[in-house]
Image 1 (cartoon, helix red, strand yellow):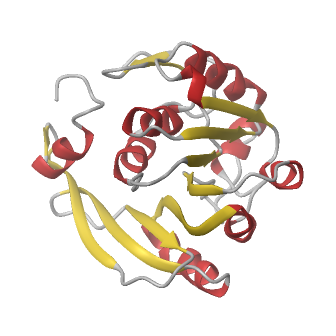
Image 2 (cartoon, one colour):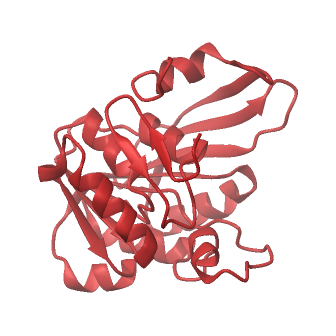
Length: 236
């Protein structure tokens, strides 16, 4: 792919100002999370806007995206305005905690590809550091903030490194969330799990769990991965 743009089937992502470019994590979350019945969706840390755009393609929901990075906001705003769903996409430029204080809307679904390198050495590049680490938004802040915004049947969907699963799940449990879906992401045959997709509910639910293999070998995607992403990636 080009470093400054990424072409999907129904929309184009420009990303020259964003610290983090389009990646598999965001695409997995955007294609996987449940949107049935969602009338209002919130995308926390939207970056280029790719997840918000995927959810706009998959639903008729009104979608609000929150992003703290000025550079990423430039890209997300451009991508929203030039998409087929511009009238259903709104961008809030600022911190999630400030968004909580200034908005009274409730949401049926909150999605987040959160900053997750919690214990690793932070980058000297501040924009990249904010995007990759819990510099501005911790797991607890995301979870407790989301709880305040969700409707009675609302859901929270995230993608995390596999090693962060227990920490995030316990924090969510203590906040009153119930795990409804879990998909463990295996990057390639013979490799250990790398990511995990989680969907929580504020109402009691019985969890479903499965696995998704991304690659069968260095050049062959699995049938499950192709099926999940076929409405987005060119050539699938």
